[in-house]
Amino acid sequence: MTHSMQLQPSPFEMIRAGTKTIELRLFDDKRRKIQIGDTIIFTDTESGEKLKVKVLEQFVFASFEELYNALPLLECGYTKNNIDTASPDDMEAYYTKEMQQKYGVVGIKISLL
Image: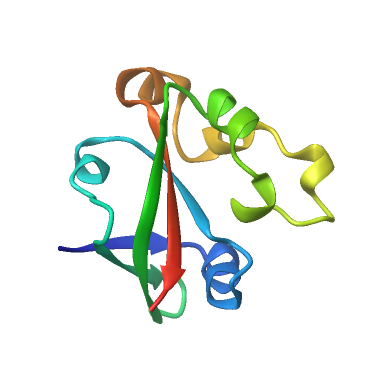
């Protein structure tokens, strides 16, 4: 099955470069349909450019705090320049704590196709 998701330019480029291999999302109804082996097409929100990836694994947690404690953040979109200030609160720019409590969160391990 193929899924579509939007991405800001910075994480889009990190996936293209192979430095971001885990995409962080709310584990809502849309993400619950994703299975290992599925394809995701990411669209850059500014350029409209597309990247096709394969889903390798999924890591489901109750909150981004749990996820941040368990997964390698350098694979989740952080760099050596900002890893020291990485915080689960960073994800509140996208998902409220209430949304996280309602659905849980997921780290989707991907590879470029």
